[in-house]
Image 1 (spheres, chains in turn cyan, yellow):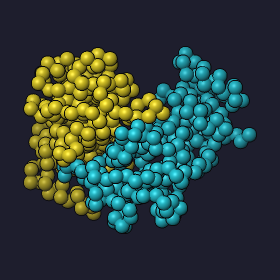
Image 2 (cartoon, helix red, strand yellow):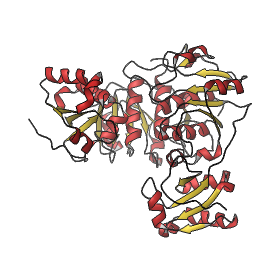
Image 3 (tube, one colour):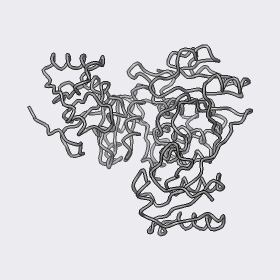
Image 4 (cartoon, helix red, strand yellow):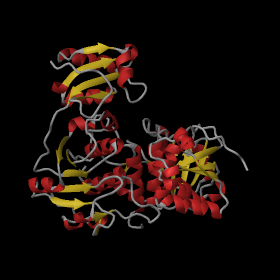
Amino acid sequence: MFQPKIKKYQKDFTYSYAFGAYPVIELLKFHPESILEVLFKEDSFKDGNSPVIQKECEKRNIPTQISNKLIDKISVKENTYVVGVFEKYTSKIKEDENHIVLVNPSNTGNLGTIVRTMLGFNFKNLAIIKPAVDMFDPLVVRASMGSIFSINFEYFNSIEEYISKFSVHHLYPFMLNGKSSIENVKFVKPYSIIHGNESKGLDEKFLEIGESVYIPHSKSIDSLNLSIAAGISMWEAAKSKI
Amino acid sequence: MFQPKIKKYQKDFTYSYAFGAYPVIELLKFHPESILEVLFKEDSFKDGNSPVIQKECEKRNIPTQISNKLIDKISVKENTYVVGVFEKYTSKIKEDENHIVLVNPSNTGNLGTIVRTMLGFNFKNLAIIKPAVDMFDPLVVRASMGSIFSINFEYFNSIEEYISKFSVHHLYPFMLNGKSSIENVKFVKPYSIIHGNESKGLDEKFLEIGESVYIPHSKSIDSLNLSIAAGISMWEAAKSKI
């Protein structure tokens, strides 16, 4: 089995880390075959989750190790008692389901929060247009509370590549100068909710793609935070069906 | 005039910092009387905002200083070119307007994002129940994009203290086990939208206060992120009126 070097995460690693009991439990549930090792802190077993995780690892022959030093070396936050070390895997989004499409997302916290919200509103397929932040970045995993392990996600080099692959999808790009207010939009299935980068949004060419949508807000702010705009778009598309 | 020591922010300081051009412009617009000093980096004047800020400071007799060293010493993020040093001020929320009430918020990023969303949906009054994160924390100021300078906010020691002061308000506590789905709630003015702490939510006693509300979501997640739940609650209460 591949032996990862336990050191601070870098994007080009072929493996990554899930910090904290909740993300590790999600990882065990959805991608146990990708787990290389689980690390515990010495004093973590007083907590209810670590014994459960350890037992599950034994059952699945997943190596475990107790090492405060290794965890402190790689942790992004204090008070991490358990870490799942896992190999990065690839997944594919499904053709007959609704999609969330993020164009050039650059903030780990926003991306993780969006994935958690997706799962909350039953969206299971995320397309990411590059360049973009790394979905396996431990900060994304953490902000998603482990939700990234239960959705499908796939990278594309351009929006054109995505559109040519999913030509049946009805496209709804969210833009400050979109044509329709979200309150008047009927999302026709299968659909793609498209959001742009945190600071730049979507460029003008998206006005020509599908039905562009805006979320009404006061002129006192330039724009809503990306995770809030994405949250409201998913809520409006999915509500009454949750 | 009070001479602040420019060093890393601590909660018990009587002054704080606004990092970045956009928050400094908001500060100049809404609380110029509280500004003690504005710091610039040497190479910041190639950018369009710094000259505008400097001119405004001259007009208002606000001291300025060029110092890369001081900015690097106190900055929370890289690429900060301008910093507003300001005295903390107090503000009061208005009795005849709708309120957002946050009980024990603990995350600076969430708080800043919620304030930015408030402004987007025309909520101008925020009540915060202690213990809570510091509204003037530079991380809150930054996540709010300077929005905190244009809203009213007030701290209370307990929810009871808040309720006794605003007995006319209709209370809508948001809880996982709330009685009404948000889709069926009519928010009666003046109203208070109440959200709990990031990890603990609101405790059971809130079920007896006003009309408790839940946001339907799938069982795949424990709860929505606080800033997403707050965003959706404000959107539902305010939409069609923005």
